[in-house]
Image 1 (cartoon, rainbow, N blue to C red):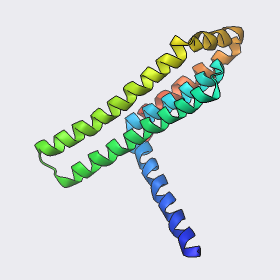
Image 2 (image 1 turned 135 degrees about the vertical axis):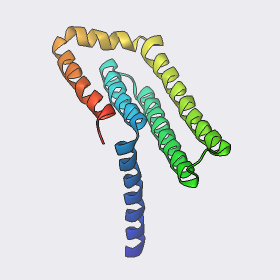
Image 3 (image 1 turned 30 degrees about the horizontal axis):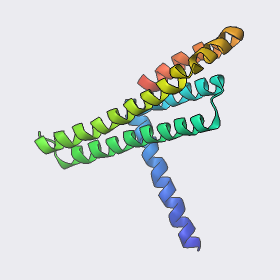
Length: 152
């Protein structure tokens, strides 16, 4: 039993090491993670119901997982060859296309939830009624920019 727990703990350590590696090296992963934070705050301010929040969480997971898988494919391809290879290029392009498909789905879901249903107006109403709430949002923008473009 103790050995089983150690193996389980080790597998989680490997997974967290992979996420950490992506955080340090992949700007697009950091962009998606930043978007998760801002969309989550908007969902709270819009008071989206539990089902919509669950769908957003699924979108977040799919988006981040696709970015992790894309990074894994890119690194394996880079390891395979240092010279130009048509199949390697196609594999990388296909992996990147999967990320674009996931991103398009997430944008579609966000558009339906925030614009079709009027949630964006609720968010702007909350921000207009509580003008102080704009300050933390504005203060977070330089930190988000640093996280996306300067964090290593």
